[in-house]
Image (cartoon, rainbow, N blue to C red; front, side, top):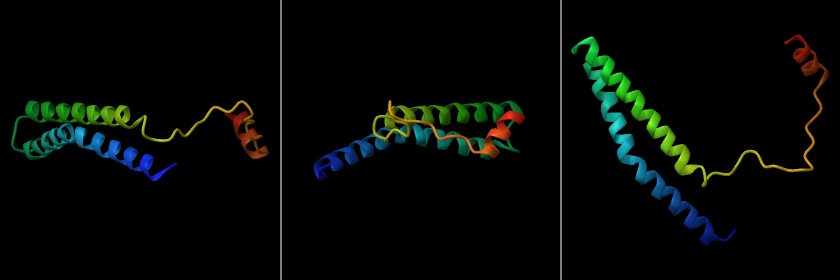
Length: 98
């Protein structure tokens, strides 16, 4: 891999992170509001803020998964010559018990 390819991939990662910053900021702001509301706001308001924060952090996670999925190396590569390791006697015994 040449340095140019590495640099452009790095730029893409930085761009992806910057694109997700407003959503992350929004999620952190609502989380902060949730913590501030505890003990001072109604239970309904605290619950609403918690649910909103959870939804926003789920959206952040999904954005990051989708945005970065093409930039991160795969942990599994299909290989027709791959042969799984044989289980040790201890692992085979454990599997038989389960």
